Each structure stands twice: as C-alpha cells, then as structure tokens.
Image (tube, rainbow, N blue to C red):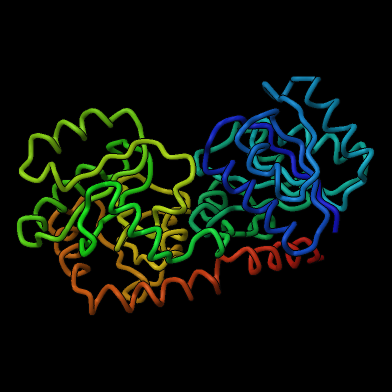
Length: 358
C-alpha cells in the first residue's frame, strides 16, 4: 500500500514519536511511505534514513494556506491509498484534501481532552478511520458521544531492535555515571513535573535506599519541577545515589542500564510509550493504575500496578522488585509481551487490517 503521512509538528511530543514509529513500521512492512514534515524538525530528522520519501511544509494553524498547498501537491502527485494524520491542526486540512482528491484519510487522536464542539462531532465522522491510541482514550471519546463503530484502537509500535537488553551498554553507562556494576537501578524517564508522581517516587525510593544499599535512581527528562526535584534530592540522605541526567535525545540505550522502570503518574495518562519501550529492553515496570497505563503491561507478569500517590505501596513494590528472583523473570516475560502486542510488525499488520475493514 501507499501512504502519505502528514505531520508538521516541530516539537518533541508523544504524538511525534508515534508518527515516526508508525511510519517506520509501515516502511519495514514493505509499504511505500511518504511524509509531509516540518523542515529540519524532529520528525524529519528521525525519518531521514528510514526509506520514507519526505516533503517539507509548515502548518502554523488550520488556516495556513502554505501547508494546504504543499500537502495537496504531494497527495496529488503520489496518489496514496491513504492519508494519515496525527496532529489536531492538520485534521481539517487533511479532511478537505481527502474530499478534493478522493483519497481516504486516517486520523489519530493522542489526547483525551475534548476537541471543540464542531470538530469533536465532525472529525470522527468525516475521517474514513479515526484512531485512539488506547482503550482508555477510546472510552473518553465514546463518553462524549462519538459512535463506538467510528473509533478504533491502535497502540504505539515499538522497534524491538532499538529497545533490547545490552549488557555492554549497561556496563558503559553505569561506569560513566559512577554507579557500581552490581547496582539495582530504578529508572524514571519522562517529564519532570509533579503530575507525573515524581515526588511520590522520590519519597518511596529513599525509603527503600535506607534498606537496600545497592539501589540507585536514574532520572531522565526535564520540566518545570526539575530544580525542585534536585533540591529535594540534595536535602535527603542519599543524594549520591540519585543521578539526574536531564534531557537526552535518544533514551533507548539507557533502558539497558536500568533494572526496573517507574511510571508513577498521579494524573491520567493516555497511554505510556516509555513503559512499553522499557519492557522491550527487558526492564519490568512499576506503573500507576490510572488512565491507559494498565494497557501497557501484564500485571504481576511483566510489572506491577500501584495506586497513584501511595508512597507506602510504591516503597513496598520497589523493595520487592529489588529481589532478583522477582525481577528477573518479569524482565524476561516483558520483552516477549511487547513483541507479541506492540512490536512494529504486529502494529503494522493491525493497521493494514483495520484500514481494510469494510
């Protein structure tokens, strides 16, 4: 099949990561993929060596005629079987171009907050396929009146080759950070914001550090609460066992360095790509039982679901996961779980199947 993906968002967001992963998945599956992207943006740079043909355009907003022109020209020249969109500002342009050229359009929604009244009603009804990225998100759309038959679920694909256990890389990263090779490393990868449960995690981890001398914490990400988190770490008794690495463009190697991942959000998450990627690398996950997070793991098989904000529950779970006999079997099961449910192969096949449904 021929696809024209349209994603001119220059920012590094979950939707952008999904856009790249899905486009690459379709290339790997043998489909012809082209993409309209923001020049020199994250998406363009990520797809540059993927085998996808790239066109450049900018949609400042839904009324930006330059974006319409560039996308219309690419669609008219390529005549793809499907147009694919990921970002709200491109929903209406793609629907219009779809009507003008007679090309069906598939649109993904990555957020649960309501669209405007008109868009919320019309977009799912005018797109030939409208996708939620989790069952949790789908339910939110149904509760706003979208007919169930119009909302399909397609999870984020994960490239298993990018996320895999790598003992050599683990050893190198731990050495560079001054972490003992026999350390148990608890990882947090994400935005440094209180809504992500970072302070619950910090308090729980420090409680475990008092009992388990091998436990270290690795914090990857940045956000408005980075300074406050650093101050609280410095004020504690185990500052030397916390490692704040800030923003890292390619986090994939760091999954190999962690023994487990924490996903402690106290606010609803639509999905949880970081959870799936960590499991693909053989790291079990401790996740909040909220939003779409439960869909990313197999409870008590590849990780544990915990009450959001409950420090005692998180402390006990981290301590339990420090036991090799608990952690190692979960890590083995985790990679197999992701391969069966979220690998690029599986998601590409499911995408084509849903597009072909009558």
